[in-house]
Amino acid sequence: MKVFISYSHKDKKFVDSLTEKLRENNIEVWRDTEELSIGQNIADKIKDALSKIDYFIIILSKNISNSSWVSYELSAILLNETSKQETIILPILIEECEIPFALKDRLYADFTKSYEEGFKKLLNSIYSSKKETYKTIQETDKPIIDTYEFQIKNLKNEFSNGNLSLFCGAGISYDAGVPTWNKLLKELLKEIYSDNTQIPDIDTKLANIFQKRINLSPLILAQYLKILLNRKFTETVKKKLYANCTDESLMIDSIAKLVRKKRGKNRLLSLVNFNFDDLVETKLSKERIRFKTIYTEGERIKDNEFPIFHPHGFLPRDKRLTSKNEIVFSEDAYHSQFMDPFIWSNLVQLNHLNNNTCLFIGISLTDPNMRRLLDVSIRKNGKGEKNHYIIKTRYKISDLYPEKDLSNIKSETIIPIVENIEEQDANNLGFNVIWVNSHAEIPNILLEICK
Image (cartoon, rainbow, N blue to C red; front, side, top):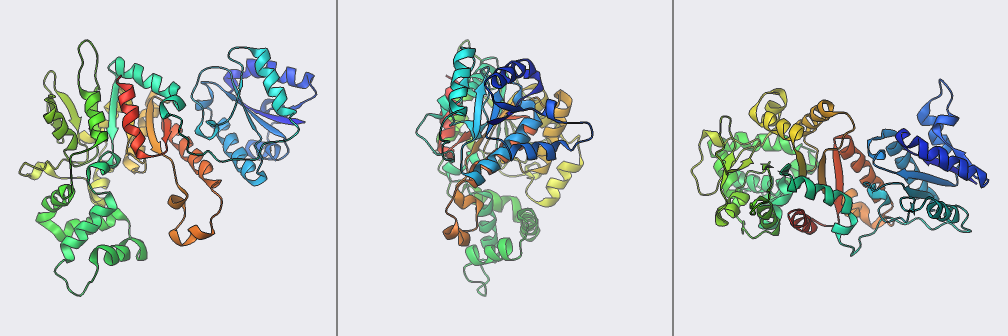
């Protein structure tokens, strides 16, 4: 029987003891520190070892989240499991820690309470007469609060200490009727070509031509629309933004709960909102919570005012727009932010990332400027440190394949592999990841944090 042990080298003392006991029970153990010779290609050697083992043991501790090699090994073995259709990963828990999402639904040998009991459970799994059939992680009715108890406990502590800031993207506004990015682009296309009788079905056919047939980047299309609309641009975007807005949103309600200051307790430190809309401001006004919206350089905050930063601009629905209401909408505007490291919006984001614990919701992490700022922050504060949190929504098979291919897709085993890759990317940018099955679960997490 052969096993591979994947671990952080900070846990070497525990792994030395485990290795000795496994070998006493006639189990062949493969470890990178023992098997690699000078000059060998590490990745190739590990990949070769993973193809020849019976089981993959991963040591779960606070140290593995900062180990790129453990992430690499886990990704490789997930692919191996998928091809073999057998469960061969055996997790071992040696302290309370964040557990990678790919391992969330697996039973683990718990060494935290009793070394002997944990080892006994591990041996039983290794010498089991039949391996379990590989299964993907399924949606369950288990409360997300229980699944991510460790992460949410940390967020509650940061909130209680007055050190938690919220970063919000487009995802927080959908349930209030604010259009998605693609929907907004289609609506602007309709506005421009509505008088052209030669183009039928503008909102479907024309948008499809621009976005799919020509394979045009949304940012390039946005720049084209901005040029055509000219002086009417910001007013038109504002009109389309609020056209079907209801102001009824559990997401916005839960954010307001984080902002409301309770007697003797801290509240959310600040909000960085990449949306143009004023949904949060409208809610706080109704709740009589003092706040200050900041969307240009030179703004100042008074005592007891809650700061809401809009790095991409702000379009309030009931106020006349001025030259200050410019928005980051098209490719040229994104390039301007990227090129100027000292622009106020970049400095605001870096200040938050360097000094606060930040929770990201409704954000995809695909914005190049955001990724650059995260990288700058993590280099400043220590490579490998995960100081921030992000809530991500799990994939469905329809998200990964074109509609025409769905009828031929019978297996969803690719989903946890994609999610694991995305989680590793977020880890490398300094995030602890909380996965939810649907967007509707996020308000419950926010409410739990401020309990």
